[in-house]
Length: 214
View 1: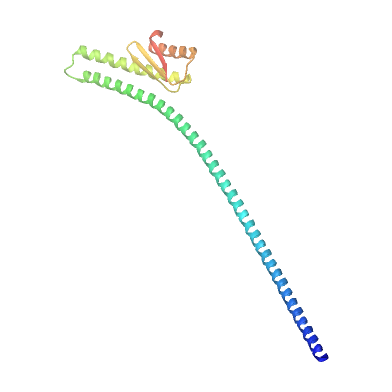
View 2: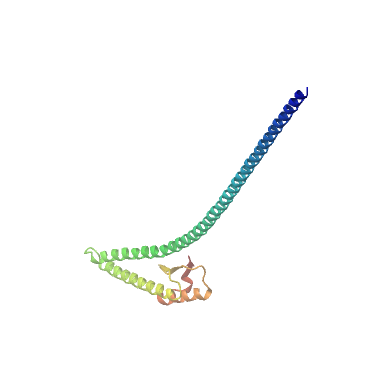
């Protein structure tokens, strides 16, 4: 009986030792798994944090870049608008000036062409063998009158230019004389100066001299 009891005690002790070893192994594995899981979680958190930081940085750069692009576009558009306005205003001003200059040039050309045609007509009368002496005399008088008128007009236009009115044109129609001057407005003194010039050179009456601006 004593031997049996001893054997049972030994068996119990061995069983207890095996159970203790098994418990220790289980505890160790659990702790290792917990540590490994914790390390994996931390690694994942670090990875997510890194990714979030990169995404924020890229987003920030994208916003900054977009703002810069918008600002550059806005500045470029503003500059283009200003340049376009300046160009448009300059073109309109130049067009107005050119149109006005063309008027005076064209008017003088048409007037001189008319005088040339009249002179040619009277010269044909002088040179025609069929013309009577009275007709030739009349043609001679008209030629002299036309040349005198042309000379007077030329002198008047040049003298008016010396008064500061670069562009001007004079039309003579019998006793009536019309003057067109490029100017926004003229003072009474300037009008009087122009009238005196024309009256002196053409022997016209002041009341027959008509001045207008363009």
